[in-house]
Image (tube, rainbow, N blue to C red):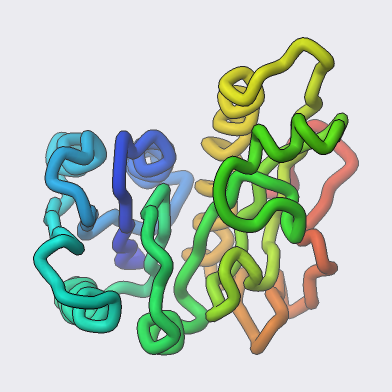
Length: 218
């Protein structure tokens, strides 16, 4: 069983999908700890209810980003993680933190990377007139939302959609794709090699693993 530490800042719906996938055996791992930079994050309650260790490490208690990330790194290491998962963790990580966990640090981003790095992705996609949008699971590197993509999921954008409607559509795909990628990692099938993601030792293309059928190849 792999040790998984999840970092959150809010409600923790992606966290819940991961907890459920671990509980069902879909992921051969255990969320040993959940850490938030905000004390009122509902995801901490989800963690406690699932039997995971829940911690708040408030960024407001630190003078700068570097000192916070060092304390965060030390807290994470107490749980000897095989994988560190960012699930709505609203912090830009320092290069030192990213380098320390290189190869075992995953994030999910609400756009079809490399489109719309950063914030307000749904509204930006609507304003650009995009007909397709989605989410991307990727390894984290020092470039913001720029690490190698493992898996993307697409959703349509219709003419009468607003950002909230699109967000709901994207969230449904996030709850499928993130547990699947974590499953691959815990099975030893997925790894990072420099700026490349490899699945079953085969380099993945720029936009990650793709499958033509409705169901993912498990």
